Image (cartoon, rainbow, N blue to C red; front, top):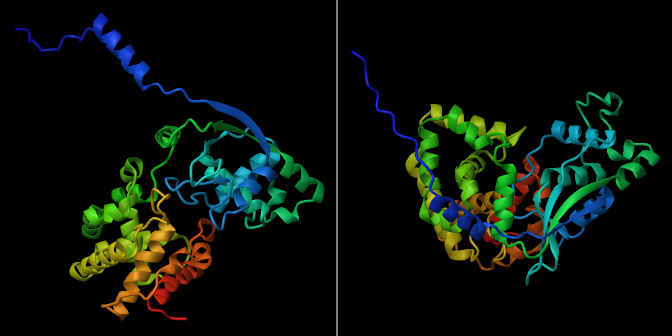
Length: 363
């Protein structure tokens, strides 16, 4: 006796469905005007670094982009490719013209390349692990022969520049599509698969607090990449061990997460610290964890400094009522929380202690 298997019949697309699909496509298509340009490296770096400290640089990194993710080896490989004259992908930027941005260029794709070039020209990057140009290992830019320095600075990079007609939705959508499918799991996504446990579940719970999401308005792509959980993990890790960590930040966070997953942690006390900190920030920081009204999202560095600094101050004075909050806009604090400051132990201590001391009105 033969066995009959029910196989669903193939759905046939009608002429009406085709017409409706074409109409939807026409509605969703947005004309994007752009120009193809070429700039020497020296000019690109100048556009990025001039005004970086006070966020007036012509070529700037938007809040929805990630912090510096390339390690020294990957940065060195990129510089090696530039020295060898290998093809480099286009950098995508958008011309931003509004009341806060006078025709500045927002980097949509290429932040790691721009940061690497700036770091190299400023002698902050020492080349390492080069395989083709082994004799250049341990070189900084100033170690290159003068003719080679000049040739490197006038090497051009191609750029796709969207005109001012490209609104923020288009820019964010383009950023996500350029990076989708070609980006490895980030550190927090990896931790979910490797270090799952009670403490990570606790982090997950706190990351979904409505007040936290209000003060830290993440975009949908960053939520999918577990950025809220990354922020909460950094808060606790720095709060408890910010003066002790050494080495790479991802290793520090992994060790902290592993340790708390394995051992018992004081859930009630840690939750109280988190909630009290959020209440204080909500009351005294009008922009939450954003740098200003025009910044649509918080940055990790800004969040770490404020959240941990606030908690440390409240531990010393639970009824804290700051005399002044003007320091938030001071050049000193902007310098301490600039992206190029990075996450070395001295810089982390400096910006966290700065927030604590300003809140407690210490000199």
